[in-house]
Image (tube, rainbow, N blue to C red; front, side, top):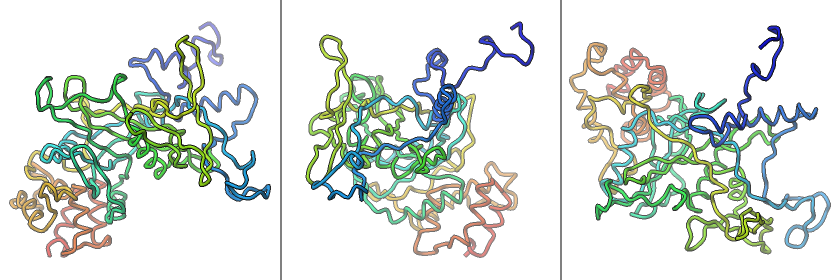
Length: 447
């Protein structure tokens, strides 16, 4: 550059985080810009056109109630002011979460033990935190610290959650006090390779362009969860825009090995699910279907684009519609050997041979009771907490288990109140060995 230090030119001006060439040529290529980069793009475009960046409008597929024009409600009346606009499905260019990282593999192995022992599929909720992710400009990473398994009915090819979960409020309180929160859900879709036709233990049957990524039912479920966990946003008049809630599928890869695939559904999908107009198809799980207008509900037209036999782009009504318009893939993985991540809980403690059992696993004869707690604590029978620093494990390793902490608060035999157990939560959150030791010497725990 030949200009003075106060000048700028094409050679030295910073690249914008949404620059298409940069995202395309990045290694690996960045398929979706981050949400913050998307905001930056909208602001810069408005500035270039000398307009004021207004706001982010949430999509609605429902009739506005109490229309001010005074006509009768649907189906007796509708007008352009209250009816929702038609929708053309577009592949979303941004995503709210750019990477999903499990703190360690042990928590996932414990989750998969249910499938290994029973052959039944399983659902869990991911608890963790969001942090800065430098793999994408202005990116956000979801870090998973624990998996909570809610009440559910399971079989070899289906799972049904049991609502309401009587422990939902308790697990939310415990997680909040530990500095984490619910950030997503995980489910298995594993078919054992009984014939051993391949090299791996499971069959590869999804997760590629030739199969499917998410079924319509899974998209609807993901959209329902995202609508319940909205992303706070100051740029939206509603106070929210989209969601950072993620979906992780455990399935088989092309070699028959177990792999983890992360997804979100688009804001358009969230709107379709919120209005209850997206339906699964009977015989094609990779397709969805838009409900038709009825006297009970007005449904806007939903279109998508595809190419005909002459390679011309045409518009088609979404009955049915390909689900790839609604799905955003999110890279998912685990820390590498050279880049380990500190675990929030005791999953990586090598001394623990018998972890405290996981909740709601009566089918596999896992019960959280006093006998189970005694068996777990027996591993630490020789611990002198006053000399914890000289031992191969720390005092925090004894109680740093989300399933155990939930049991201490929720059991009916020696239930701890939140006031009694709050000092323990504070000590665990701050990794305070002395605080944990002091709490374990308290009358509440010794009793």
